Image 1 (cartoon, one colour):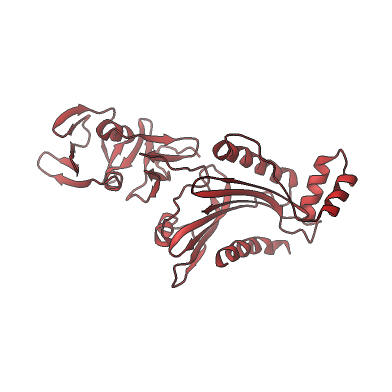
Image 2 (cartoon, one colour):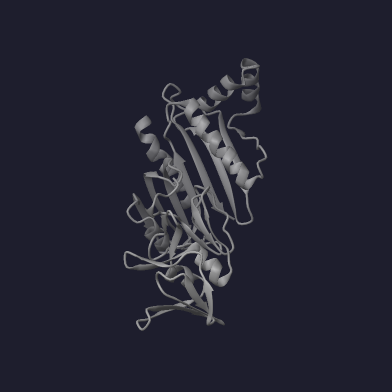
Length: 318
């Protein structure tokens, strides 16, 4: 049965719908502007000087229109009450005709004009930071993200499909806008390999599920990976407070039998109960807009000699 378990897990998640630090060069760093994931014209660039983003995509999302004057090779950005003029390679910029010195100069990369994050702060005085811990770029009001959850609820099916171009295993959308997209065996931003399901309701993203089965036969390794994620998520969503995570799938009599048989042996109790399917490790945290649930279970509990330990992390829009 073991070879069918990954498919089983994907089906379980589908039914719920139906009912590394970047190296120098272009980097697959998610870009958030005022809390929303932006699909830019080109990927951000990281080099020894700093982090650069495509100026048209970023300032367009901030409400600016872009234009170019061949005379003087001047790039212009305009919004209500603000005009910015700059040239590639120059450390000087004009904001409403006032000359200002930049921390770093804009540059041309592969035919696209990029500006450093400091350009945004220097010109329009809003925060623009590279979050190394979670491997994302945040501009303006920050989004609540972590090293796994790096999208925005409300994104459309086509937006996510474009974002994950080349990675998708399969997907489907019905006439009501309910849909799913899934892919597996990809390396996430923290270097861990896993799979993902995106679930949409009425045309917009409503759930994101991560599946990790990189230690399916090794209880200790699977438990260690789960615990590391739990501690990490607690820091972000629970102010570091430890949260109980026993979720019994059996009645109180069975639980009492475990307590008696494995008195003073908590490790053996937990491993046996998880392996037999009588217990899952499961914890949920909530934010103002979504919930986060992490769990560890044995998907092959009917064959205890051939376990399939799997960790899942699910983000569900409220």
